[in-house]
Length: 377
Ligand SMILES: Cc1ncc(COP(=O)(O)O)c(C=O)c1O
Image (cartoon, rainbow, N blue to C red; front, side, top):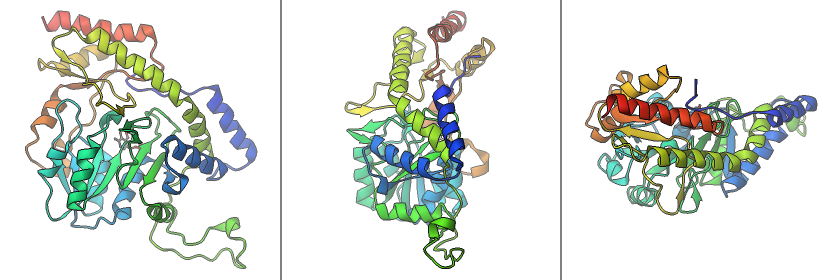
């Protein structure tokens, strides 16, 4: 089976884990601190604004408390959002307000967001679909004019930028995932960025029980180092030196990964461009960069599901991300989202990862063309 997403792990990652084992400390320590510093450099920010956590979903859940979003406040989400974003808003007792998205990029635009702003709107939890940047100038202008917080879910946008700024560093808070299916993988893990370093301090406490004092040996200046106080009922959501060691190794490989992913993107563009029944992804806006996390096509003749099943039978796994929240019965939200509906019915994410061989790519494209000849002429 040709996977739709796949991590690239090897000897270097194993070696970095071995080093941690030998250090006799596998918990949160020097490797996590080093990764936070290097990740902050990678996104051209500073370590007083960056913290790691155990997963990006934790970032979504914590964002509610960190951005002071209360029960009853309204939070706008593109209906094409990750399920964890919807859950974070609802679990907080806030009102999830959905907006439509652009039919081709699947990103929410300022005009989509503005339509659903009310006096109760406290924040926008924005998704950069597959690391493709949203129109941040327009969105930030809108958010500023209504005094609304912007939280950026750029889980898959580890190398994405908007007019020279890394995605995730433009809004009040941003987050990236390093789970098993992302580009930079560490098993599980995530990084959070805050515009305001004070919020990073608040996050450090929230992500570790709300402790006001360092625990254990680090607190050894005190006479009774087992004493402590808390500032909030915090969680325990941290990376450790094993996952950070993997992440540090992967961070170095990102430029290579981007080169490969861009080549795959170009290959698909070039070989699929003559198929009239398919729309290819739109070019990225001038001055912006994507991380090439998804390669999403749109099947124009209503045969997306047929194509997905055909490919699966032929050993090519594809999928659709992200099933719109207004279609998830458990949320109980309805409304009119014609663009998201179009996208949900016609979009397909093709295999996209840095381990795809030329033979894999020829198979994917060959099978799509074969399907076209059988069912689309
Ligand atoms: C857009 C988006 N946000 C957040 C997450 C959550 O990331 P994690 O698996 O690190 O919790 C994911 C995971 O797939 C995602 O795709």
